[in-house]
Amino acid sequence: MSDAVYPGSFDPVHNGHIDIVQRASKLFDHLVLAVYDSPNKDILFSTEERIELFNEAISDLPNVEVVSFAGLVPNLAKKYGAEFILRGLRAGFDFELEFEMALMWRNLDQDVDVLCMMSSLQYKFVYSSRIKEVVRLGGDISGLVPANVYEALKEKFS
Ligand code: ADP
Image (cartoon, rainbow, N blue to C red):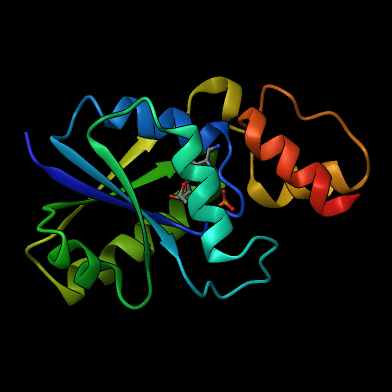
């Protein structure tokens, strides 16, 4: 058993992320969910909002904590004493990106290793960007995000 950090934008967290967190929480002693403070893309929810939504959604998991982070992911892992960086993989498209990023992180710090977990089938088409677009256009995304996230999205677009 060991510790891991799971970094991402989580704008907002959806059930594909939650599924990975639930499964990974059984593999690691401690899992740090790291919400990227200033992602290189437009974000809808502030860092505080993204953390709150994530915290509410994983409150039943005792060995998981949500933090914010800025800077390099290997430094984040070091800070929390984590041996692993956890990432999720959806369809083929994610693989190239995650592979290249993992190589860069390993190049920065050989002490940390990157683990990827496969998406569950029912979430393999779920992207935060697509979720936001569908809600903005009035579509139904129940079952794809936690209830608190759905409410927050509807409020943003009302
Ligand atoms: P996104 O906006 O694509 O959801 P994030 O930066 O929030 O992006 O994703 C953080 C991590 O979670 C990444 O490793 C990403 O590949 C993974 N992830 C995102 N969506 C899913 C999903 N539906 N199933 C499994 N992993 C996912």
